[in-house]
Image (cartoon, rainbow, N blue to C red; front, side, top):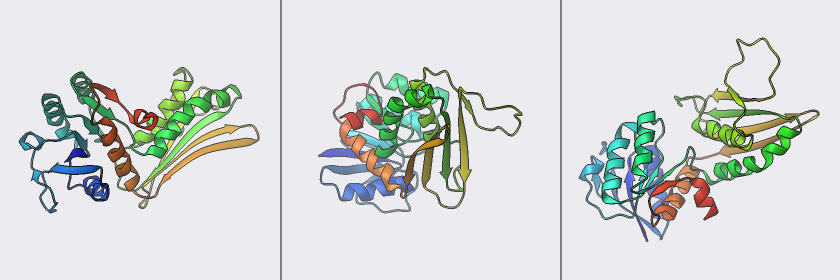
Length: 252
């Protein structure tokens, strides 16, 4: 049994994971942390992680960037691994995360979906073949109209997977409206669409002469991210200090 502290338990993803864990006999949420107390859970909820005295094997974090530094101090001090899902971290916080990983296991991923992370692995294998054959590479991501950042962290992670396979020689281009030139070969175009209630839609397009290959992923529910986080928690619970990502979970 993997004992979990759910950091950000009363948020949308926190409640999603609470529901997933309720139907998983191998995982139990022993405590939650959230500044909001408008939801009653079947586990104790603390206002701050520093107040939490529960015995746990791993922390799943879907909270706010402002709470990450305190979380990292707590995790390192108590030697509890963290599945860190909060986005929008500053450079200083990312550095803090790396320092904390010297003392405790931390898993950080731009997207917790097993599907997206499998695609990232696939892209590293197939991209050189398409690039050598002269294919242009474009990424299009679509999200709901409430999403604040653009492009998405997942789109950038996909672009990074592509670029790493090409020796990091390609430039990311987010807007061509001020350009009056032909498309350079060593370019990865990244476009963002915002509208309606789209959960998450990502296309990696390899466009060649007379043919186009598109690798697509569509999230129909945020549950895919919650399921990935729970799988990551099970994986990370007994791991030693270091930085991990979802590729480690996929590879076992």
